Length: 50
Image (cartoon, rainbow, N blue to C red; front, top):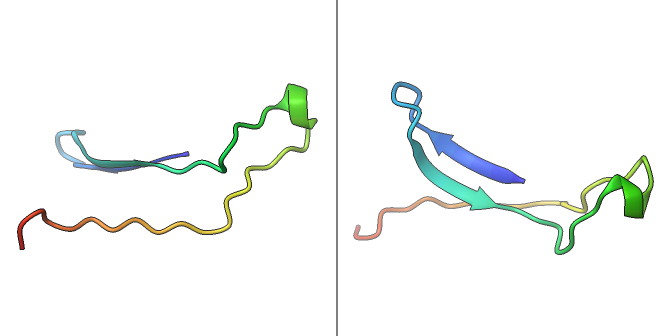
């Protein structure tokens, strides 16, 4: 799953983070009712020099 912060005027991507469950699932391998194993995530955006 990709999380993005996007400038709404220019559509420029300001920040991007990829969150995965550790392995990729799909319908062929895991059946039709597969779900991602993501229980919680947290992303912090901080300036490089405060």
